[in-house]
Length: 206
Length: 175
Image 1 (cartoon, rainbow over the protein chains, first blue to last red):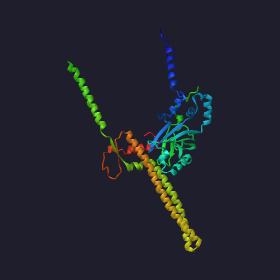
Image 2 (image 1 turned 120 degrees about the vertical axis):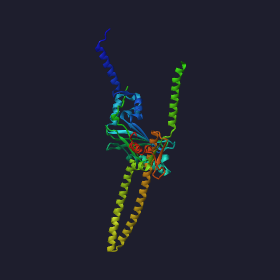
Image 3 (image 1 turned 180 degrees about the vertical axis):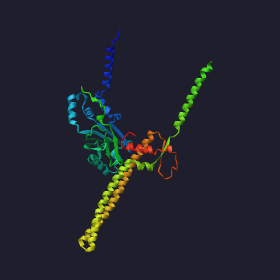
Image 4 (image 1 turned 45 degrees about the vertical axis):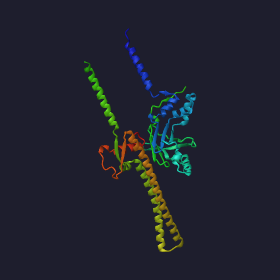
């Protein structure tokens, strides 16, 4: 049997297409896989930094990640995803920020507060004034913190958690800055990758 | 004939043993470096940023005091021309205010300088520790200029690499 050269070429072309498709940006993931991908420090959207007795963690939250986290997989229809993307908009970048004890079991507030009055002053600072101490640096440009919430756990967890949103500066790796005034660690800078510049997996919908 | 086969094998095994022994010996030698702390402190960019803030705060305080001083001098000159009771009272009140603010600003600046130092050393100690861990150093000795380390080989001087490392770490880059 003599093989037709055209068949061989066609087969090779088909193989190449399959390989190219598997490397393409539009590879899709289940919600759990997407969440794991975004939370993996190797991809540059999650950074940890330890300074003294505290560990600071920054988690960038692309829209697909937010949608994957907030909805059960069966509720993730194309229409639902599109609607949430529309609600999240294009004007802001979302982040979670965590301050945790680096080694001890004492909570951050117990470590930082010398007296009871300090404890309540810290709660007050983190609830309101701290918003002005967060910003993103994109080269020489600064993005203000537009939305801010200190997620209080009332000492059920040792760490402090914050969720926030900044003015959007696309196509640029940001430096997340926290200008600390109360923990004695100075300015905390962490550099992340821009989700726009990464080959983020797309969310698979049923 | 058997000897011809055994001897190369024995030699290889001996070579392997010697190699492993040398490797173990090498790994047991403590890796040491020293760092000129004063130089690192001065070159640390957080220190420069905080110093700039401290200077700005100092200038603002000085501006307030200078404004009060101008008012005091004007009042003093007016009182020299003619003694006026209410003006004298105002002068004394302003003098007290100046003294109070001067003391207050001095205490505030001292407090700011202490806080600045705490922030710098918290970050500096962390980054230097990270450097020692990353480079597998068993001892990283701080040379603080007091004469404790009287001399050292230049190849053990880790000052410049540490300065680069701590400034990259401060700005959030992978060191």
